[in-house]
Amino acid sequence: MSVILISKQERNEYETNRLQENFNAKGIDCRVMHPDNFDIALSNELHTSIKYKSFDVELAKLVLCRLGAGILPFQLAVLRQFEQLKIPCINSSDSINIVRDKLHTGQILTANNIPVPRTMLVRYPIDLGLVEHNIGFPCVIKVVTGSYGEGVYLCERKRDYKKLMEFVDNLGTKKTMLVQQFMNTRIGEDLRVLVVGNKVLGAMKRTAPDGDFRANITSGGSGESYPLDDNIEYIALETAKVLNLDIAGIDLLFSDNGYVVCEANSNPGFSGFEKYCGIDVADRITEYIKYKIK
Image (cartoon, rainbow, N blue to C red; front, side, top):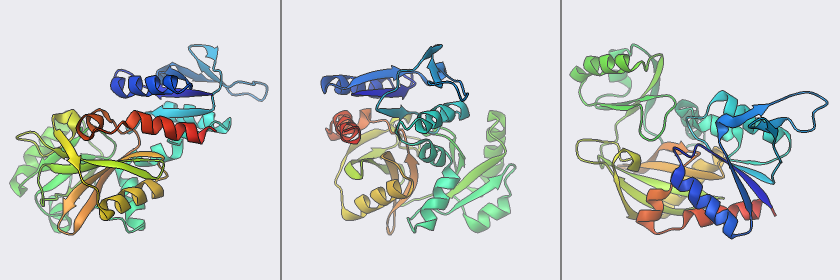
């Protein structure tokens, strides 16, 4: 049995190493491949249409993709080519493409009655009156695609709006953006819930560092294990289900009525999860992949 693990090791070094070690320990040949080294050749005569570093790729039973919101169109095309050759990809190219777009994700979640913060898609420069009427202040401004807490800004007061827009303009983050309701039930805290194969592995409460509202571990936040309840499990599983994610990190914000989905991640990091929750995530993913390639 063999698995191709597509990963940018420079950004997923911990997860890549943990997964490769687990696969090899369980007798599964795991080949780690960088997404920038693929080429696709299409013709009716070619038996193998995917090349890696100029050589034909020896096909595997399954492709495990460790690319998320930052995935490029060419990298999506590589996944689609594996799928066309009847090689299953986890997660699939379609599901990755959906969740990299935060608005599309929100559209699917609301269509399935899964709770999300009030959200608007707006064009730059943003109409202040429109935001004030539909969302209110404080509000969160996000780029449509992004991860690791990047491209997320808090506008606390109406008078801060102009300064924030100047800052966003200088970053070159223009065109369309999301404006989202700021959930102030528990400021600077959220939950990361990991789902693997329609099972919730656990939940981690993340707490933002002083002076920040983003609780991402990669942004300097801290974590701790958080007890699961029926509501957490239901929302996380339904979110993964409607987005067709085999492996997912579902980020929940606390609300007065329970929880709302902040984001869904198709490439969840799990170093913090293993550290703070004591759950061997790499082993659980490996066992799921073994089940899928039987």
